[in-house]
Image (cartoon, rainbow, N blue to C red; front, side, top):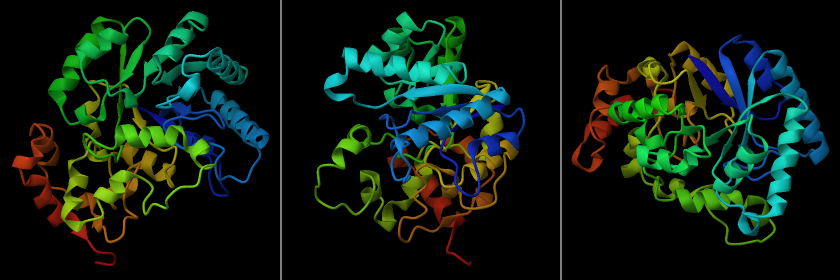
Length: 340
């Protein structure tokens, strides 16, 4: 199994090319957004203290290093909102400039987008580039894939299907029969069926703009943190969509490459290493993005303490959490206080 990891700028200790080099042949793709371009995460240029030109140069250098290692490049245009430019010539020019900037350095394996307009534009003017539907499009059915089939070549499956092998099988069979690719994000920490997602995705899309418009101070970086600001709700963390490294082998028959959320993660090397080894001794929250490990009071959830029937149980339960106490029971068994 191969892995697709998210790009982030190098720090004084590590860089994405160095991480990839330490696992030769195992990272097949790196995905990234362009500097100062809205996407599904904060813009690459934010909070770095570097100029836009310096960020571009750093990205170009790293892409060149990745190209030497035969790592594919997946460009993200996956913002939830492009505002008044959503179907504009101006956006077309931005997309074209971005693609040409990258392809002067490294061939593009694919573009991932939430925008039908962007997908149609790329299909017409850059037909050699595969187009994937972003996970934020919440593709969860054959009907949805059929609606997008004319301009998308692949689909990131909705996170909520990660523990539903029957649903994955149905999507995989259709994709194989229709020459489409199906993709998995393994370590999203987001809430299951998150009611805040549309609101949060739009906030992120307009993050740079919002920074210029002061507003009411908020306690947490996202609405889901407010939901979890209650110990009685912490067991919901186990009901989410992530897959333990130890369970990854169950997905080999569906996916050649597994995507790992590492664009904003503080320890991308740790995340990749755990999923490559399919083993992790530590707090499972530390592998997720978002992980919620820094939420005040949340205990360590010892990944080595999960019961042997965890995958079998959670992949066949139908996710009727309101009728079940299994995750709540597991939460109490694997919870540890620091230094316990």
